[in-house]
Length: 87
Image 1 (cartoon, one colour):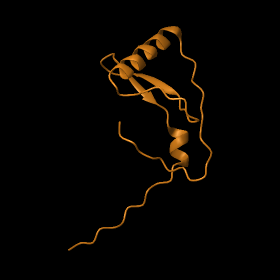
Image 2: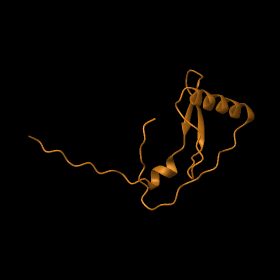
Image 3: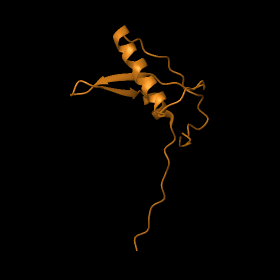
């Protein structure tokens, strides 16, 4: 795992609740989550922040697991990079 911080200033944590999924899609989501946990990609968390998942069908028929971070992105303080000097 790579630790990182998302600077939201003094904004309180955003906790969105899961969106309703049809049973078949929920089973698919559960399978994808289990696969990512088993492969060490994600881990269980009980923090004050949460964003809903979105399952997107790809052209080849497979499913892309996505997280809807739009609300988090709106409050995230963007990092300003220093301009580089041309030599």
